[in-house]
Figure (cartoon, rainbow, N blue to C red):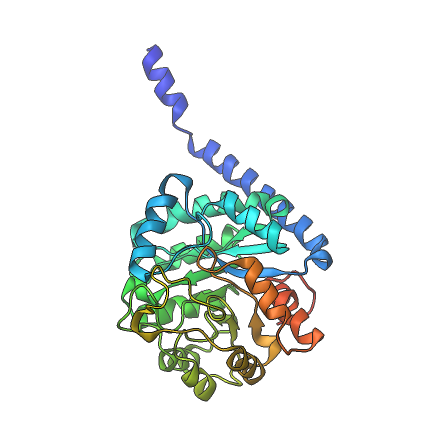
Length: 328
């Protein structure tokens, strides 16, 4: 009897689970309220970073480093991200989970939701992850909305499902209906090339067919496909982020770039900012694959106006996230 009693006590009743979820929701709302109150003091938002649970971070980064032939700048943990933010002067970082198994969507998002309970203390806010192959995508997206997430991350290359596949389109459609920000990896993935699962043409197709209202195409609209971005996305109503698009690529073997890949030149970056509109560009690094301090310094030294830099570093992100009253 004593054994059975202990087992029953370890398994929450439905009522207890409901109570715990309600209390967690209150903590997230309170944390967000505090963050919103101090939004004026947020000067740098990194809209695109990645972290890993401490127990798998080392192995995960080792594999990703081998696949991409590049070296990370941190160990990929939340603790190391916090140290990087402090050194770089980054006030808020957005963690973008990449989910490779549709069966793990709910579990990963619940963990990310717990992280968001302390955003006003850590300056780290997580988006949710989703997988186009999840048959219960409607339930998952509504859960994401109910958990208070501001957005979702898509990575077509890891799914091996094109961005304009109907399975992705239906996620983009419902996420837009739920007023979620949608960040998608765009262009070549340095560790998974070829092929390209989120081409510029696929972004155009989704925009034409679904008309997402809060779409962010990472890596300046399409990594290593920037000529097409200039030709086909300039002037379109979407955002781009600056993640892993400028500076030197930290190759494991210096002087031996994979497939001839290279970053945007400073001139090319400024041209693309002006083509897209500075009010549509979000500061981002892709940490741990780029150094936050280096990116802050590089963009600060670019021949952009102070107003353009303010928009890129924080104002665009704050408007998109709803931290500023002005509607996007």
